[in-house]
Length: 265
Ligand SMILES: [Zn+2]
Ligand SMILES: [Zn+2]
Image 1 (cartoon, helix red, strand yellow):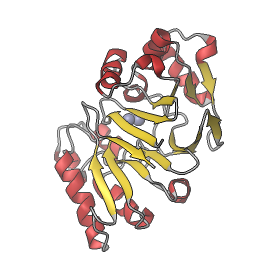
Image 2: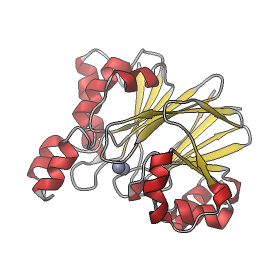
Image 3: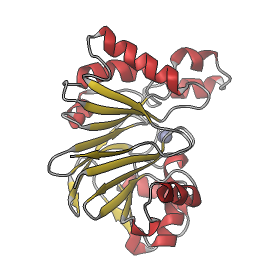
């Protein structure tokens, strides 16, 4: 029985990641409408009724949109840190007290047979986090919605087996694109999003030639496209002598559909 991962959606319009181990089935974020998340779960043969918890990275709408609806519809507890709850609660509708659960950033906790840890990222939300999810053997990490990476983030991702890594934009496309100047500035800031290039260089410092799987995600619909993200990252890796397909598997997630189901054994 392996640790399963499937990206239901990943992109600037909505994010939701599915993780399963033994009987435990959880979501990280639920940033599309409830019905869309349900449909994606159905598409990978998971009954939304069986989801036991939703863990939230931060209160932006592309991460929480369907969370309240799913919690009410299927009686699912939602876990977030305290400050995120304060910011999120007014946006997700009425919650039953028993389904409001908190965790502390940087404090590892168990959920059934899984161990979860959250770590701080640099983003314009109240207390945004990334997650690591492990069983005793394998480690899944999620890092999106951060303007920069630092030693602490790197430490948390150490020895990952599968990483969902943000490649939000191509800097040149963003600069010449149609976004208003203030939004461009926000995305490029320390509290914005990772570019294809930054993600690529960060990866070169992380990879250890242990056949890691890296999924590129949280792509902008305006300022990036999948082939460009993949090509940019692959070129940077190759420059450093890392061969995609051999030393590491680089694959995509999708803005509007579920990606592959990975089973880590
Ligand atoms: Zn965000
Ligand atoms: Zn986001």
